[in-house]
Image 1 (cartoon, rainbow, N blue to C red):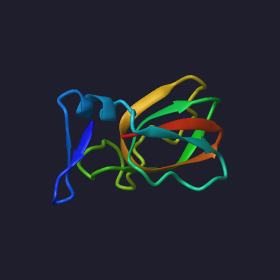
Image 2 (spheres, rainbow, N blue to C red; image 1 turned 135 degrees about the vertical axis):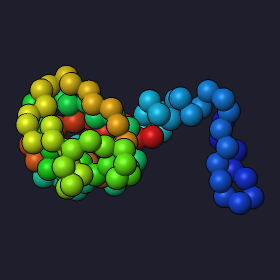
Image 3 (cartoon, rainbow, N blue to C red; image 1 turned 180 degrees about the vertical axis):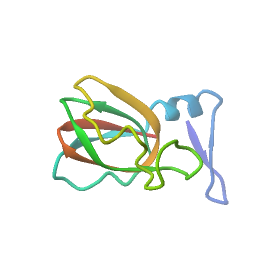
Image 4 (cartoon, rainbow, N blue to C red; image 1 turned 90 degrees about the vertical axis):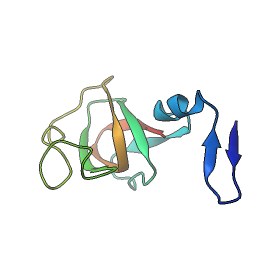
Length: 103
């Protein structure tokens, strides 16, 4: 159960932060050629072999990779069934289909 305080900040029960970090806020279906997801994404499950065109980290200090923020390993193909975890504010596919879990 989420409680919103007068200041507009959300407070959660002890177990809820773990649930949120696992994507229980919801999900969005990603398909190549559609608009980028612009919510906080905590996991991406690839439904078919896919390549990523946009993967923006939640904060500049929370990723490893090159200065573009894409990281070094997103230029390859992610195989069907793979799930990656992290914190991203934008995700867009160049090819393939995936589910983005929101946090």
